[in-house]
Image (cartoon, rainbow, N blue to C red; front, side):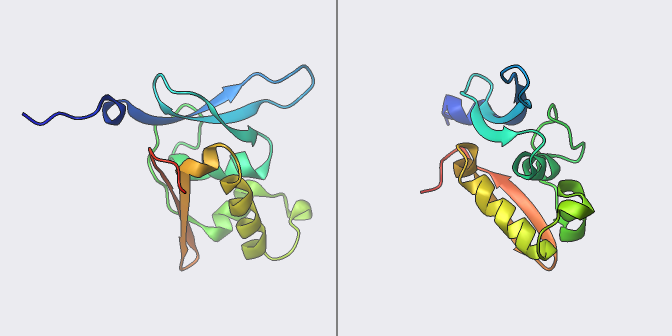
Length: 129
């Protein structure tokens, strides 16, 4: 009989919005398991959270299940930045945001692939070392 560790069975990555102190923007978290801890990504109005949400699932909502979405860099730039807030080239802005995401608590479980003007995100059960 083959047994599967319980953590594998409950691996269901989700994005969760949390309450913030009065006057502060809501914050977004990554939860890997139904009963797992919340891992901070950042304020939901910042590019770091928007990037994770944009690549998390096709519905682009915080309640959807994780399903990797391949996005063009053009679509990512439009989703992350208003034209007047984009500093530098789009590729530089995306790279800076990717690095910033990977520095977050949740970023240890996220990996990104970029090629041919496309980006995709993967979620892992194990933190990257």
